[in-house]
Length: 104
Length: 157
Image 1 (spheres, one colour):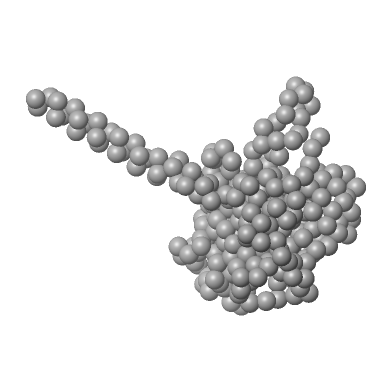
Image 2 (cartoon, helix red, strand yellow):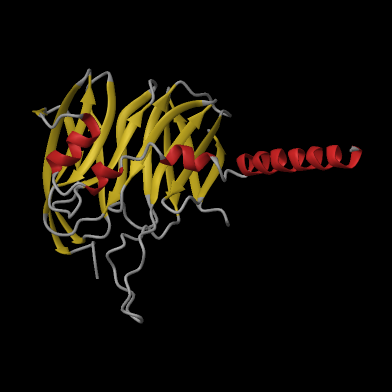
């Protein structure tokens, strides 16, 4: 799968701010296809995890009510410039993607 | 005899390498992760049912240390920015619920020990609804809510 994650992590003082954008349809399973009149099956990210130096800093559990092409931001302490941060998602069809970024 | 042994050996290595590849490419790991996704809570039709599923309790204490930031009026219910910031220590998780959505639970965030009690995302609102943040800290549940007026719904065609 093409890369679906854009993630930035910036350190200010002792707090790292992480901002991530994922391109994903986040289909609820309630919307009809305008051409065929058939329901579009639910297709959404269920879990997003973020690791810093092997430690889990955030686990997000998502339902269908997260907007299309989701945005997520959070902050954590204890990182240095140059540290690696990995963001990973898994959707309800079992697809997944991960992206590593360097804190700056 | 030697042929037979060779064959079993071959089969064994093939099977092992297939499993190894599956783990390597992330084919197997997501299944294990997915088992933790609380389907009942996400399918729950009321706020109380969703909270009971997640935390085993729906007793909430109001708290003015939870700052929930949402627009007063959302022109497009499909994309409503929400951010929750908590001025408390020892926050374990933050959940965001939309009271009037068909399934109120939108998302739940478990924080690591060094993670600030802050999350921001964008949610869908079916209609004008109260957006509720539920914070778990020290084994107790705290909440704060704010109403968002929606002019065009975001859940359905």
